[in-house]
Length: 216
Image (cartoon, rainbow, N blue to C red; front, side, top):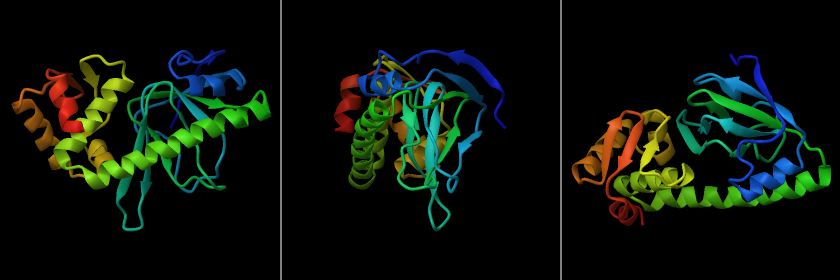
């Protein structure tokens, strides 16, 4: 279960990080941030569709259970990301807190401006989904992991230390590989001197050029 709202905000922590998100926020009402503990559901697959959401802090996984019962994670939303963009009256995907996330509901202050800004975000999200489909179909396990780490590094500011708040099983369901393969590939990258596994939730990039080359 989620806790009570933890604090009020008049502006997002991410205003200067993403111009497209910033455009949505400037057309949104000030709102409250609600804390969702680890693995808490923000909305479930099949729930009635509703507003958009902004990640103020923490990580959110977006996933769907397929007809054969398998889980496919389509994205991880970090601080400053907007999620909940779906077609139809019901959510086709679930959104869950990975590591304890602060979430703000986005409600329009200017209906026309809000809709225009959301359209821009939706088009970018469509492009991201297409890239992820290509990643799943074209790359091998080593290349998938390298691309995943390069993407996380970029989204977290480009530092050589990358936080991995998600479980290995989450990474597996995002990359379309097995849990065992995730662990094996991380060991391969470690043995090649490309990364150092400082903790289970932190990776240090030792050879950025090598990682980027593998991800290409």
